[in-house]
Length: 524
Image: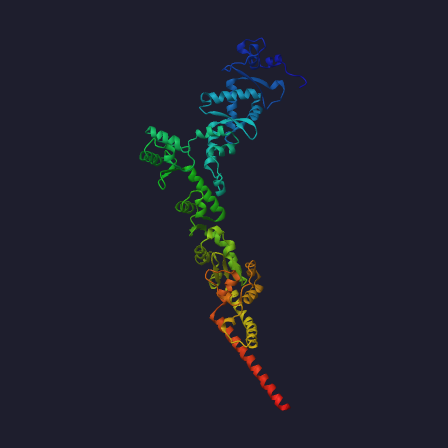
């Protein structure tokens, strides 16, 4: 500044001169100390500050005692106590709002951290180092621990991927709050996850509570307490504490005595509820990856989503899963076409064929419009481990009507082949080749042909393709032809058409032969 402050000016502003007694000397004189020694921090120490709302001129400068500075700092922590970060206030903010030098705020803050129990209503103050912003921060310990507990109890681990990559609580808190692992460990150690209302009746209970309250995932009791206590006594103590509400968790004896903290159960439930709400289903196999049994997942989902339906390997929300399927099925009915139901199903939730069949026959009709229900039941379905297709009744009839011109064309070629090669007519080759039928249907319904785009239909042999071997699946189009077009009536039509064409060719040949003989005799 153009007119820098001098010690004399500061003394006058503080209401004392440089010649004042030691008891009345302001902070800046005391801190200098005799011989430049560090001043002693006591209750009479005074601090120099500026009014943060005033001007930066000398007229706004004041002097206060350590207790007054402490009260001002505590009021700042109270003011920002509702922050999501635990009410942490940075050193820079405190300096700006208190109008004090950084070293002075640090000194007052450190004094509060060591003596706050006696001057802050028993509320402990802590100093942390923010690793992200590289600065010191102060906060009430209870506010910070409340935020930490909220993080540990909340839905931070809300997906299966998060749970599988889950770090320890200390690492999680250190990362979430940008503090050192040592600070996080100290803060977590002072948290009671669930406060009990009963006093401990024994030294063992005290030890069990102290140990298990800090557990965040299922643990085998024997692995923690070893042989220092008998298993029966330990199990009885843990069960009793759980029943009394002193231990926030449950005890199971499936594979030894396992204690599961409530934090872990809450996290599991959050993951399940989040996934189910987002996707409309959840599989037992996926739940097993986070340690959930079938009975637990049923309980979780049923409580949160009462309309959920239990399948063989999954639980589904019928409204979420069936609505898009009902839409494409109704569109197929209106367009006299077919639809790929499998494309609308989450693959992992419908691995079992019986689940898809149950969905299509029992659950889907409930979600469909009443006007389309009759047409849906009259349609045809192909369901196996590879596909789930719906064919409208009109499409099936149209494909069946396409057989007649194919039969007529094939019977002429077949009869000609038999006559020219003087072969006995056998029924084996009388059927229209499957490849011709499939190509004809695929030409009219290209969407259906696209489902088998990777399959080489032409490479299939003509006769054997109609009869598939057990377990053989050659694609949706071929499967549809085998199931809906290969009938006894189709076989009879093919045989009759070939016989009729052979008879016709024979009669024509016989007529030509008689005519040629008659013409030869006339010339002689």
